[in-house]
Image 1 (cartoon, rainbow, N blue to C red):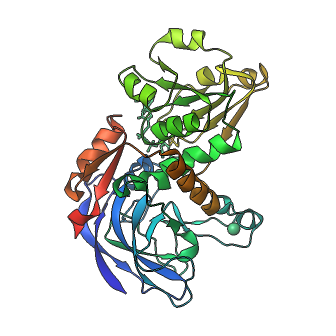
Image 2: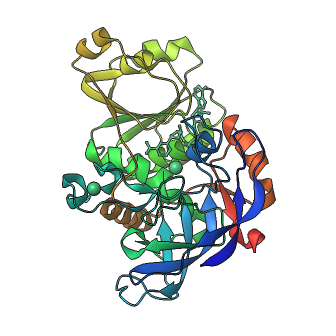
Image 3: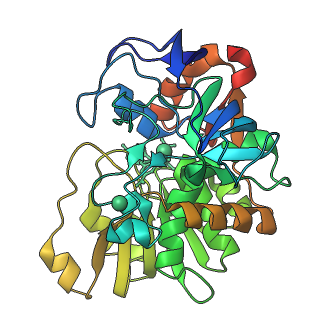
Length: 347
Ligand code: NAP
Ligand code: ZN
Ligand code: ZN
């Protein structure tokens, strides 16, 4: 066991504070990672504020992790000391259910082990990446291509895979019209990835304030959802809509923007329900779907895709002491486009 520096939430309302967490000694199949950077996902905020349900405090969150391997267990074959590696939202799963065997560990029927706030195999509660080190089973550690700037890698491990997976599953590509609702951490990656896949991308943001950025990320069109004319102009337009909004929205207004047989996939996870009108669905044989992160193999595929296409998240690098301020800015939709904690500031 080792004690390492970390940042933790101590209640749903108190600011995060500097503290320490315990990391187990690496077992035969474990990798000890020295964390360099950790991204701030809106899910971290939903979790520590108790918006998705009760959690045990103190809790260290963070599931966008990049660093280097500093120790490996005797049976580890996939990673070696010095490798540049990443960890996303899961650190284990049952490995036996139908979904795990299909490489879809995120849909493990017994529930995967989340990187934080989950019960680990030893019965302890997992603690996430806002810390200097983490110990993870080698099967849940990703190889990170060298040509992605290391400080920008972390957000790919959640924001990148969470948008890549539905875009790939619903065949975003040439000839497909894809809309992205909300251009924050997930949304800006959805724009970049969908454009790189060859789709025609439209951003649906609350205002036009980020229009130049959206077009630079590869979107062809950019509309403000605060303008009712947007919903008239774009009715029956899209093959696929990815909803990344962290708050409750009028989902029926967006469903009407789908053309015949189109699908709206919600990856945004507001605590409140998103009530759907049946008439809106059957008016054009539309589908309303959800999608959760991505499997380990697909996460590796996404990292390799981003490296090949030269895609990286847009980040704002902060020190550990700026995390509380960053949370406020994320909640206020004032993020351009992902906060990343420089973990050197925790050492
Ligand atoms: P984020 O950076 O805060 O981005 C969310 C964006 O939604 C904002 O930038 C804003 O975009 C828009 N938005 C926020 N509040 C809004 C409101 N009241 N009305 C309309 N639009 C609003 O958050 P994120 O880290 O990308 O995460 C987005 C959501 O996905 C969160 O709920 C998170 O928990 C969830 N998530 C799900 C998965 C999964 O596996 N399904 C994985 C990761 C995250 P504009 O300013 O452009 O309008
Ligand atoms: Zn996340
Ligand atoms: Zn399973």
